[in-house]
Image (cartoon, rainbow, N blue to C red; front, side, top):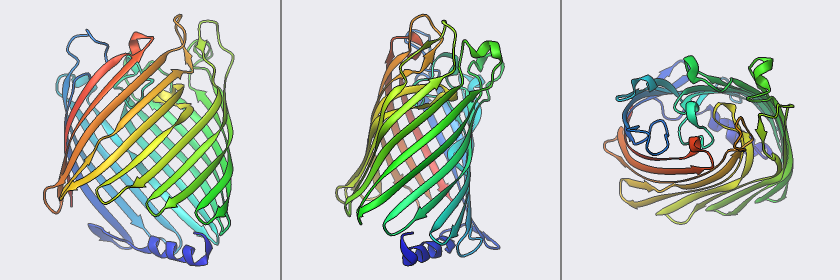
Length: 397
């Protein structure tokens, strides 16, 4: 949006409906459906020797996108992807899900300002993607909802961004399975940068989070204490070439828990944070994204943890109609607090996978994938190995 010309072209692009299946008045709708078949060798992420934890999962789903250009400057977008996971051997794990990325977004433009109002919702399973989840917190439904607003001020020589979000983590598990309390957080952030050169942006950033667990006063001293997190740092964003972009954030973060009992083990949660993101299109056959860093934040069921991470996601277009991806990732972390006499729960997770995708017809596409995940820990509840094979079909109406 830098300058009147860029702002005008962006507003005109937002007013364009683009591809759609159904046109209702000024709104454009896009529909698709999916069917996934998955074999998971360890659906509850149990340690070795725990019997036969494997299962076959069937996942039908539907996806809807709506775009409404309210005016030439304002637009409303709604996205919803939902479905059902049917576990054939463990029917008690069957559940509805809402894909991450579902929600609504409303953009308002006023001069050099862009104001965004949003609400994002997801209902997911706590699988290996939440490396700090263990025991009864695995493969249970959890609802995550984030509602907030942000204001972006973009000029030719600089940019400033201010935002606020309210986030809820709600356990949908029934009975005694839901061990972790529900969590809510209030988050505020601000950053501002100056364009040192047209391709280089440097600036400062800061943020604060208030974390509250819904539990009675007696339980609060032995399970999950309320907390305050603050951070301050700097960032840089550069376009190295037409095919390579990089961004680096780094600073200091401090996670302060409420006073707790001696039964609750806490770890050092003050230190440096950093995040590196590199996107590179090598040629028409190969592109990749590399991310790495250190962070302290909320994970499954609002469980806080500090961790280092690296993820490499290459994408190959070696053959006509076929695309390949081979993601590789590593994560090593410590749960911020742990109710055990054994000390803090440290873990290390490594994973790799391969996915082959192909368009079968103009509207039907398919993908076949495999993933291997191995997690080790000083606690048995965090140590497991899982193999996943999945076949997915998507039909675009």
